[in-house]
Picture 1 (cartoon, rainbow, N blue to C red):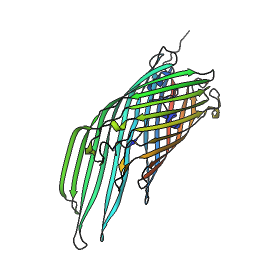
Picture 2 (cartoon, one colour):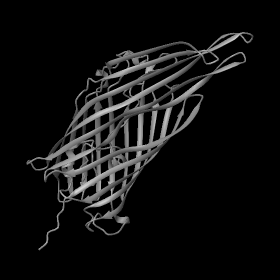
Picture 3 (cartoon, rainbow, N blue to C red):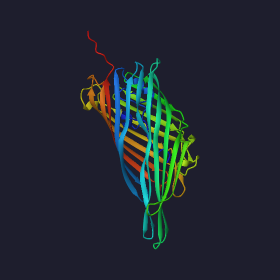
Length: 409
């Protein structure tokens, strides 16, 4: 359904703090959620951040239960200064993912056959963005330009059993569909830092992403095979330029920093999916008025470090945690023709483990970020499939001293 399970742009630090990012401003990692944060990068620093993850899922309804495992490369981001006030970030981050396989056994007399459904693929985005620290004290602005691309495949195999045990015909129809999408997206962000005291700094952030009236290419292959595997009939459909839009998005958030030891914050995101155009050719059985919901999501997170300028490994470990909650952007129809979506719950726990301090004072530290995540998708209709996931991700944020020239006296 739709584009699959949506991902966010959270990386490294943000991923461990429940996915917050609008007000997150750090010089230890890129934060593509809000491009205004790029201006925080130190003028002599180059940061490379990459992450991998593994997910263990459990799906169940009123009668059945299924487990699945997936994993791979999550993201790659880079952050570097262009000048004293300007930071540049580039990278690849996910937008959505599709991965499922299920089926049921069909019986007629002594004849059994398998009905199966599967899907794979997803959308990714390559981005480049600039953050600028304006002459107005505390105010930074930024923008991302992203190229979103990918394919989403669905396949279903349906048996057809005709006759009785003495004379039975078993044919199989196979349908394969593919949506290919290529489009551009833009994010505009702003952050404002307000010192509340010598030890406390409040950062407010906001991001706007305009609606994208994108189109995609659709391909459908349909075959009917006999019990011996020979082709009875086949049909191919190709349509270019079908509706495959993306919503406008509004996000606001804040973080509070206490002497670089304690950091906490929260985000709110709103996406107008109800205004998105999406082609009926993709076969979800939904109408334009029922397909998508306006989506909102709340994230909250916290980070604590005992002593940022200590030489002790333990005192410089960053302890992180977070929660998030939201509704689904898409609806589905159950066997009773009821239409509804689901609620999404999540929690994270993470650790930032220091691996190198190039200045010896805690100002330029590279980190290994270890994150554990729990997510539950709970349908609003009781007999739909409920999903829960346990994930572990590992990323490394390399904070290098670049752009520095030694002077010989």
